[in-house]
Amino acid sequence: MLTSDFDYDLPEHLIARQPMPERDASRLLHLPEGEKISDMMIRDLPALVRPGDVWVLNNTKVLPARLLGKKPSGGKVEILLLEPAGEAHAWLAWGKSNKPLKPGTVIRFAGDFTGDILAREGKQVRIRLEAENVAAAIEKYGHMPLPPYIDRPDTEADKQRYQTVYAKHTGAVAAPTAGLHLTQDLMAKMQDAGAELAHATLHVGPGTFETVQVDTVENHAMHEEAYQIPENTAAAINAALDDGRRVVAVGTTSLRTLEAACVDGRVAAGSGRTSIFIYPGYRFRVISGLLTNFHLPQSTLLMLVSALAGRERIMAAYEHARKEGYRFYSYGDAMFIGNRA
Image 1: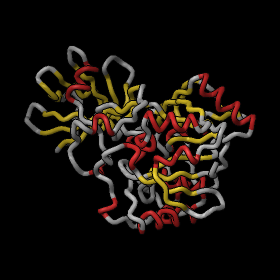
Image 2 (image 1 turned 90 degrees about the horizontal axis):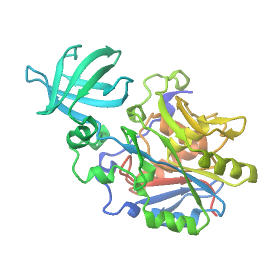
Image 3 (image 1 turned 135 degrees about the horizontal axis):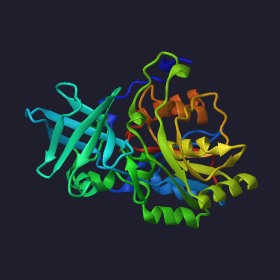
């Protein structure tokens, strides 16, 4: 399968660089199985709920993981924290500087907040952060890690809007963007329509934005991410599977979590790490519906939705979205793949 099969052209003006004034004001493209595409609004989601559905939300919380600092020479440094590295206050990170960051380099982010480069590990560095309260320093001085295509400095507003309203467990360096559309009121209406809302956690890594760099899809190596599935979530999903009810993922991260945790037809509770790569030909074991945003050309996420709905149907839906002026990517509009209630 060729990576180029998942390419498409997108006019710059359709890239959403700002969120909508209200979370639930985005448009929704409905792609039901065996039916024509329809144009809806996110506020219409309760009409797409089937009584007995289990909708699974990723409650990871985005860390303000982008740290800006200077070397002793005065050279500028940008650090993107990826995940804790075991020892106290040590992190694996991406580092950007005019010269490669060497072990022993001290980076000053603020008067009372520094980082020591401990080692280089391939494309990553291991850095130890030092402050009176490291977690508080990250929150105070860190910037929200907006994806590169947004192409603007982050603002105070992004600290709320690049975060779901149900975010709970800090650890992601990218938002589970389908969930950005949901409000407490909208979720309550979905529950009134018969949906059971359950939560899982997958700490989204920066690899989610990377396009595939190999010509053949099957040769791509997927990034790895940590996940956690509570006992009550696994129980709700397994009961739905037993009863033939739908399990709907809110976002590709929820989908990947549940598919990765499925063993012998059951979703296993607990924690783990996954590098699951879903592309056309994959046989879904858990998910029968998906709420998702529009994804980058030649990305693993576009391949994932193509596996669920079919490549030709997805590319036709994307063409429809472009013609109708839908907003794309993290702060953009959404698509629901599934059947009407």
